[in-house]
Image 1 (tube, one colour):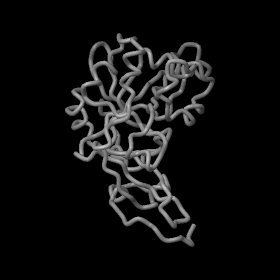
Image 2: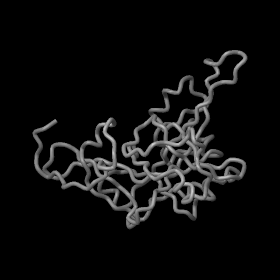
Image 3: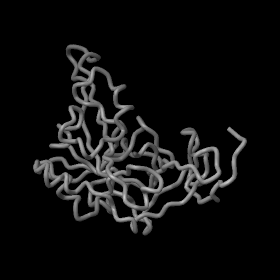
Length: 242
């Protein structure tokens, strides 16, 4: 799964990397080295034939939800069930996106240790990940006055699938990382060939990844800053601490 990640590349750099229009000033986000569910994140999507970057809430809120709270449980979407899911079937057909990430965190228990230790997974070449995602629009019709348009919430989820051999040492799932050759097909809102789209949802090559242990400061979402991704020594000794 993917429950915490890093989004620190400046938006103008992301725009150049993804060939997209940068976000508007009001949608620009501060660098975040400990992105948590329900926070605002960048997503790359297509609208009227243009590739754009905008801020979305992480945790997809289906259009049929009574309240947006359900989104906190929908930060990840299983690749195997997208076409059948009541929550993801519609966005899988027409509202696919890329979620830029400088890397993501996973947790493992080193031999002899009592506590899990976080690891940081990034690209070996230092480029951003393009994580497969879905987005949706939820409208708060109950909270709007009769003469007002309903409040709209744009949200997204990250698609996960089988791990490659390197990630399998740490978890039985991983985010789907799409190569540039797949971006056009994935983002094309007119592409409804679910068979073709599902064939894109495969594990990234193990050689693409670099994985190293990081501080347990990551465990607390209030901790932030570039020091969180610094490599530390593996904790191989039993810990008496909490």
